[in-house]
Image 1 (cartoon, rainbow, N blue to C red):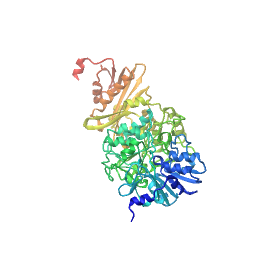
Image 2 (cartoon, rainbow, N blue to C red):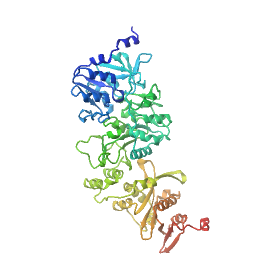
Image 3 (tube, one colour):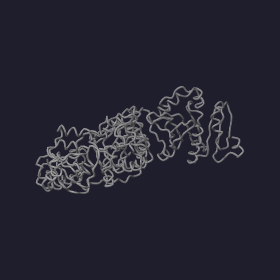
Image 4 (cartoon, helix red, strand yellow):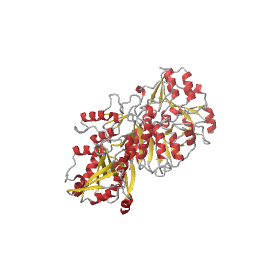
Length: 626
């Protein structure tokens, strides 16, 4: 029997010889994007071949350049469209194959997408004569299994990776030794709004989460918000440079996985030489074919899977249009759907889609009433839990179309909200009397957001009230006793219909501020307290009012809210507060008495009228009495 070294030597050919084995009319699978076999592609260009169809997972610059220079001789079919290919023209959507990433291997094996020749790059053989597919396993393994002829370019600069990346020499017909630099994708420089989106996404990721990132910008921006997290895991489609930082800083250790514990899983790698060197012989990272890694049942077997992907547009029902090539570098079905399904199967999982609120080129809203006729819907209404823009987080899970529309308008660009409201009313998505709201500026909204722990270890989130809080404010109202309702409204109010609620939840910051205290996970938040001030211009003072769930009274919530309102009001030039409190509401009177300002009181018909001016501090003797 020949040794593997002898068999290796017998299969060596030049790049020109390898190209000669390809025939006119062949369908040729090429290693994709960063794993293109450049020497053999160059030889194919110098050949006399005609009518050859290249098949690539993601179009690479070398194959795209060849096809554009010699039209008619070479065409490209791919599973993504819109990739950056240097100075070449953008590929046509007509040659894009819309399949989910996990489906592609089965199409190869069943020859629904036939492959005659597979030309790939491999790392040099190990001491047993086995090759590694290196940075690109994805659909490449199934292409090798399906092709009648396999040609491999052996490149010493290709890292050797762990997982299901091994190719036996017997599966390769011809070998071409040719060292060359792997294609690299440099990191993008993110702008302010991408950084804001990344920050909001970071808030949705808890310790112990298993993460999947959409490629490029989002993973890069998220790193700064995840480095302090612990026990994170990676189970993703494409491993990129920013993920190296998470592993090296210890945030990712994969300790909470139920399978492949301690391992970061992916199907391929795309990035810089730093990434390729990091994964070389790295036992912490394993690559597997896409029908394994992207199987939704496999993804969902882990708890707390968080899938974060990008969109071009979202309609008011929550449908998602395919990814944005100006941010993600590529547009296509890819693994978005697989991971979103997997996250929804995961206990405690979250599916998240991010997008800028407006298009970079046109400035048009990316949140739209409905899509145009050429729009490609990649995710349906029930598959996404969260939509994130630079204006905040919209939770869609379990919500009606009306609630979804309101939540999405809330995170749209302020310049487009009025038009979106009008369209939503016309389409029947909103109440006919739903009015356009001008609420709080993004800067003030960010200023007010905070977390607070009250007595008894009660962990709460404090923020500005939103129009989408109607349901939670309604629940808070009906949780109050008759006496609490009377203390708040000075009347035995028995109901809180939509007409009243939308007035309550829509406040212009020039007229006043309302802040709420919420508890519970994002998917099941409750409002347990609300406080507001409404400006009365003639006096320069603001009228205040409070409402706290009786089950949480006595924990310091009202005291905190009053002092927080004072802090905000001072910053906004308000001169003081006033309030009318029933004499029988002694707990609320004690809250006001704690303020460090002179309390001007008037008593009439069982109501105490209070006035505080912020420029009138209490005397020291008064402070000591308290």
